[in-house]
Image (cartoon, rainbow, N blue to C red; front, side):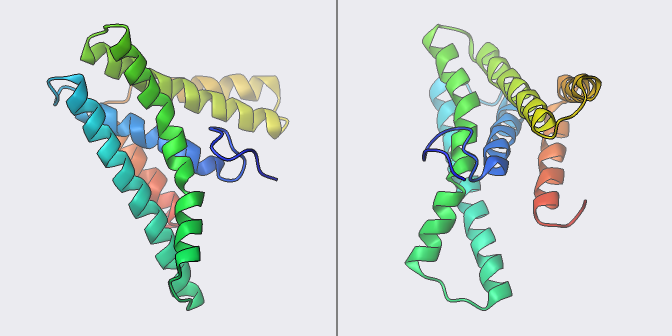
Length: 176
């Protein structure tokens, strides 16, 4: 079952949406304080995001082709890039928070903080949604939300990068 194309919470690749949110959060946390203006921050985040998307889609396709001994076709390439467009959709949420902050005149540091906390709220919301869909008990939902909130609220840029690396390792099947 698939939602309309381009919808942020599309069911066709929810992991990609979450991956995009976390990737943008890690990028913003790692880059905070490195830019003098919004243009630099937005441009570097967008370029890095597009590279993540490209690399993620291509490596998944290449891995599948290696396992299945398939040829590269325009169709398989398009399918891979369209499937992983969910990463860009997810990343658009914190990026939108950054742009909105810019629009209302917030300092760059405040905007990066707002975008990073947007990531936290999104991950908690997705965790709660997953718990609700799994028919978790209310106490389990509260505990899961608190764990995620505590984990993210203490994260430094280095911890954000480490969390992203762990997530990538899980997606590649390198760890549980």
